[in-house]
Structures are given as structure tokens and as C-alpha cells.
Image (cartoon, rainbow, N blue to C red; front, side, top):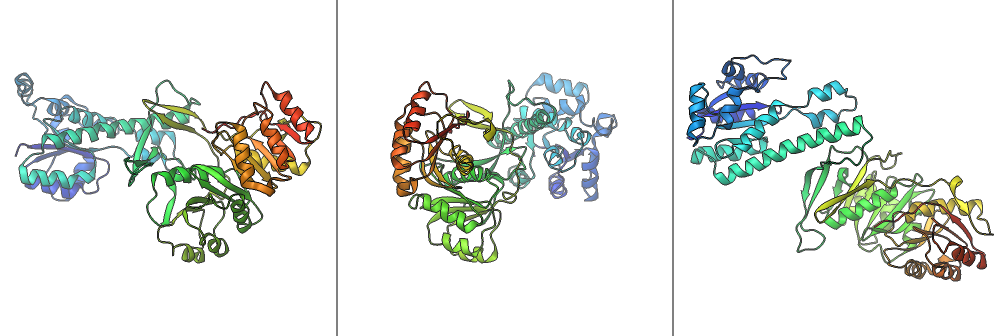
Length: 516
């Protein structure tokens, strides 16, 4: 047995008694810190407390326990270095061959609804990360365990081989360094958010924890996984949905569902958003959920095939019956009543996702990150809607009060459609959506082709200014009665003239809504 001495100091003590019993049977001496030592002693396993090894008591209310040369020299000494071994012998220091350490529950502490900064600070571990990093640095001579899920594998190796292979030691070291890096990242992100308004610091750490492996990524030949950002957000979002039924979510399901969830957050009335390939193809608000669904679906009756649906109200029997007639990938709602679940769960592969509090007022905040090869882009979340009082009416014809209300709805829709994008709206439901085009006039043609006769007397919204009058002329020919757009083109006067010539009212919102 190459492992003769272990140091155990854990915050999460689940399983540590059984692990200690097993390594004790292998003849491994155990030293431990006070609270861990108490648990191990109570299980009948002999131990030495760290204070008896160092000759110093734990002090400063437990802030200093293992921060001592006798402990760290025992971990860091290279076993094949004669000078290191001579130094240990000179100072009567024994080597430590196995470290079992997990850290103070900082992440769990900050999840509490009411937690003071003093409690948060006291749950920042100092000695633990130092021990872990020391052991991981000296991985050839020290086995480092940072997670209780590793106990069984390490015990099996020790029992069968008397040691742990170099390959496994390397893997454990990587896990250890990742563990401390993630711990520090969570702390720095939490304190930055609490103490500053700094959203784009010079140095930034993104901490992620895997939620699931995907069967594949965007395409079957690509590997993929889904990660949750840490600290976890409290806001309803794709990372904290509860799957009630159906297959595991795919990579593309998650992207589409995120789009559907973020769009539905714009609306407080009973609403429905239908998404296909990460862009909405139907959006509606109404007095009840069934009408919202029907209005959203009528926008484009063929694109929802294999689509994702989000609702901001409980799905009941009547809506479920309608949905059951279609092939859908995912349905998201704050709840599904019993009858709805019975109807929809008959479709074996249909994913039903419960997202609590999506029907409540949501405080949307924070930053978003997008990856590029070799780096990340970060920006504020696009939650701003310029209020109507700041809009500018630029045409001879003025929009009516109802048209202004529809424009407000249309703006909330178009900001979630891939650029270049336009939407056509009547009251509070879309009748045509065109997005993801390289020319705005192409997006207009697509939306009109989808909406057909329904485009007449509708409101048009554009995510950015019109560079030419062509899209306005196309919309006028289809019967549009009012347009809202950001304005700001060098050809604004030409575009306004096109609207005036066709007796269309036009409003400049002053805000662009690009979505790449």
C-alpha cells in the first residue's frame, strides 16, 4: 500500500464515515479537522486531529485550521526528491498521501432568500482551496478527492491495486483545479454583482455546471452538452424548467425554447408564442389562452410543424385538445392541469415543460454571453422598449389610439425575430412575420406571402430603419395602414414620402431591435 496517510476535511460529510472506515481497514492513518473528526470518531474510526499534528489549536473561530507548514510540506513534498525528503526528516514532518476535501457551502449560502453579507463572507473557504491546490499540484504523489461521487472508485482502486494509476491521478487533479476555479468564480461574480454596477470588467470568469449531455449538437455528427451558469439565476428561464413528460431536450430544442420563453416574457395578458428555428412564427395576446393560441397559429399554419410553443398561463383541456392535433416538439407553460396532461402525454415524445412564475411579473436583468471561436461577446440583455411618449409621428396621417396600441405590441414581437425582420400585426396578434433575411424588402415579401389577405389593414413593424422605400411600397400594395420603425436612415425623407403617398401613418420609435 503506497498510501499510508490521509487528511480529511470536508464540509459535506455525506458518506465520509463509510469512506473513513474502509481506508482505515486498509491501514491508512487518518488526520482530520475538528468537525469532520467528530463525525469520523462517532463512527468508531480512530483519527488524529490536525491540531495535535501541528501543535497549534484551530483559531480565529475556525478560520485557521490547516494553514500550517507541517500540513502543506507533508502534501507538497516530492517523494523522489532527496532534498525534499531530507527537509521533512529534519523537521519531523510526515507525508500526506491522500487528501479528501470539499469546500464551505458558499453556493448554497447565497441561494438563501435572506442572507447577510457576514454569513456570506464566513462561507468563503480559505484553507480548503489551499489544500486542494497543493494536492493537485503534487498529483504524482498525492491523491486528491473533491467530490463524494469519487469515493467508490478510489476505494476500489486502493483495495485492488494498493494505489491509484497516474492517469486517474491526473484526472483527479484536473477535477480539483476546476473545483477551486469554479468556487472562486462564483464568489467573484456574486460579490461583483452585490458591490458594484460593473457589468463588463477587464477580467471575467464564466462558471458553468453541466445539466446534461446531449445526444448530439445542432447536427448528428456533433457532440454537445447543456450547462447552467453559476451562481444560478432565480428568473424563470430554460435552465430551470421542469420536464413533466417526453424525451430529453435536444440541443436545438433548448435554443428554440429559450427564444420562446424570452419572447413570452414581453406580455402580461394571456399569450402564446410559436417558435421554429430560433425565431417566432406566431405571437398573440388575448382575453383567454385558447384565443391567443388560435390567433398565433393563424399567423402561419405550416411553420409550427415540429415547433416549440410557450404560454404564460396554465394550459387546460381546451388548449390541449387543439395542440394534440399537431406534431410539436416542446410545449412550455407555468402549469398543465390534469386533463391537459392526460391529453398531451399520449404523445410519447412530446416534451412538456413546466416553468413556474412565467405568468408573473419578472424582473429581467443581467448580461448575456455568446461564444465565437477563441472568445465571447457580452452585452446587456435587450429588455428596453422606448415608451410611446418618446415616439415621433413623421407622416401627414396620424395613427389612431388603437393603432398605437398595436404598434406597441408589434415592437415587442419584432425584437425577438431574427434580423432583418418585419412583423405585421392586427390588434394584439401577428398576421405575418418575415425574418432572417439579408434585405428588409425580402423579409417584407416573405411576411406578406404568409399573411396574404390578412395583411390588409394591419400594422407593420421593422426592427431597423428602411434603407430604401421599396419595403414601404411593397407593404402599401398589400394594404398596410400604419408602420413603426426606428428611423435614422439617410433616406428617411424618401421613406416618409412613400408613406405619405400611400396614406400610411408612420412612427419613428428611435430604437433599433437587431437580433443576430
